[in-house]
Amino acid sequence: MPTLPHSPVFSERRNLSVLAALATFCLLFLLGAKGAVATEEVSITAPMDGKIVRLDVGAGDTVFSGDILAILKSKSGVTVELKAGVAGEVQSIEVVPYEPIARDQVIGVIIPATIIAEQPAALTSRELPSIGQLVKNLFQTTGLYGVIDGQFNKDWTVGIGRVLMICVGLGLLYLGIFKKFEPLLLIPIGYGAILANIPLAGIAEPGGILFYIYEVGILTGIFPLLIFMGVGALTDFGPMIANPKTILLGGAAQIGIFVTLLGALILSDLVPGIGFSLRDAASIGIIGGADGPTAIFLSSQLSPRLLGSIAIAAYSYMALVPIIQPPIMKLLTTPEERKIAMVQLRHVSRLEKMILPLLVLGICAFSAAHRGALDRDVHAGQPGQGVRGD
Image 1 (cartoon, rainbow, N blue to C red):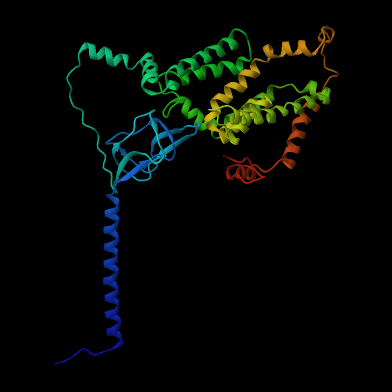
Image 2: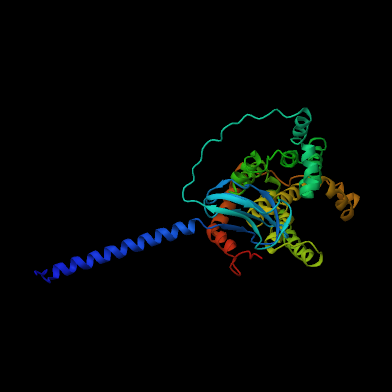
């Protein structure tokens, strides 16, 4: 019986066939394992103790990787966005908004899917509800219902807390319009406080105009820079140039930063329920420098959760200087001293006013730390080079 010749070419072809078969088997095994893994359930767990303040999905909803599922607020006030790591369908949601949850507690379950097919929902005819039901549905869309439902079924911050903040906004409008206390500051802040706290309106939530203003202008740092430019353009530095010693008064204001920072940390240690971290205290301390744009910018970078409170506190107390200063001045000065007419010592030329900002710009350009290195150190929390976190 004839036999195949035992040649090197024949052996090489046989080895290649065996390798191809093994590669095919491994590929099929891996695909099967991947398909098996894709059908497993993925649990959404809480990374810390707290409560869900916003739930964006429900059972049966389709989600994609990166979609926001919920927002968790810890007991210390830190908010965390919970995002989907896989695409699929939400099988169940196990929590109710504003109810306490523990760390590692299951919030919901997602069934992963490699392909998601979406089709428009078909409109189905429904029976017209009764007049009573229509009135009830209409009432549930009102702000009054939003306050009542938030107070008794959710959390006081979305109930009576909204009413209090609207009252604060109205108070700021009154001071800005009728008392003329920094109207350029208090009127926009007052309107913003009212709009952001209108129940059920969602103006400050995703999709609302204030949400996009915050995302585009505050988080990017554009608005604080524009405010700096506007305030600088409106400021007359003539008296300071005529009497350079007054610069020391501005430098003395920086003492307030450190006093306020240390005060916030001391309160955190002494008063139960106040848990300011070093980042929170640094953001609060900037208020002591009497500089609103800096307070907004630093808070947006270090402690975004306190941004609203810090902005209102900073601009409100600066606008209330006409009320705060008179009793202090009466306490520290005599009637004769208060009668002294404060006039500019000499005339300051336009050239001097142009040289001042250019000189300050040059000093900052060659002496200040590089912004990129500073940001890296702050976010990395390197000892001795940036602001440490918790």
